[in-house]
Image 1 (cartoon, rainbow, N blue to C red):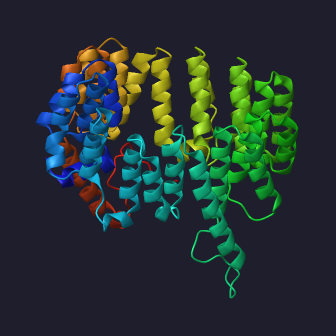
Image 2 (cartoon, helix red, strand yellow):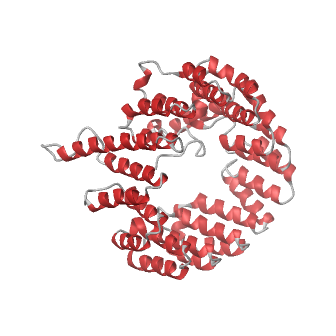
Length: 481
């Protein structure tokens, strides 16, 4: 166990992934996680196991599990240790262990976590004081609101946020004499603070004031961030202000039309909601409105109409997920054959541009339709052209065809990087959790594979050396878009 490997795991989800940890807990396999924490130094397992032990009242055992991680200076272990100590009534000692030194008080991440612990220990005013110097960071403003909810200090929070909003308004009003832009702060910060003020007002029952804050801000005519109209629309919907929401949807349909339609549906006006969305599609034809109408139709049990509603988007370059959604709707409706037909309707141009995606969807649908032999033949042929690439898909088809041992043997012999997910998941489906756990690579093994793949990419295409996502496997870290 070392800090470098633990940091790598936190970023890449190597070792036992958080999703797999949750699966083992759901299966009642707490002791497997404890073993992995002790023998493998797996932080994901240690954290989840410690929290589960605390839930069962085993505080001493949880702390002992975290101790080796905390001793090497792994900060998340120190924070969780303090959290557990607070839970068992040792708040002062816990906070003393993690109190930031003067240099760390300038680190927003440290102060955010320390403020959470202060609030948990009931020292809310101190938590607010720790966060106040960092309110220039939008995520720490949100942290302030979240950690104080339900702790009886909403007036204090409102006061801090109001002063921050006034400060930002002064900066915004002054602007820059030379270029007219706002300097020293992000131009959207004030809108974010107004949203938080409204949120706090709403949670304490001052709903009229909450609405008025956003209403006045929108009426100012100043440029606002893209999420502001939608947040305002959702507030109006929660407060039942349907007429005002209708006016907002007419003025800004891209942000508010789907919220307005859902509000109508929630009040039993389903036909009106459908008409609003269809009119919006006819006027603007934005994918967001099509998605809203598809969801409404599915809730009404009208799956075929939902699929037809999405049809114009199925080959949009940035809406490929609409096609997969439609296929899943048909499969869930018990019609994988119809889903295959829909996939086969794609144009030759679309198939040429997305060959692997179309092949993967087809093999999945053949399995859903029970056409296992056909799917196995196609996956085998693809594997002959691209050795190992289709091992996971082929293994799933073999499993569904009643040949689980062949499927497991294929995954065990495969060099495809996805088998680190597929092999343990298949073993779990067949009631073999201990084997599944042993099949998961350690952090060091996961890291070695990822770094080897990164080197291979760099040799194949040196341009990827500067790509921060090139070292991931497509499942570990989602790119920021």
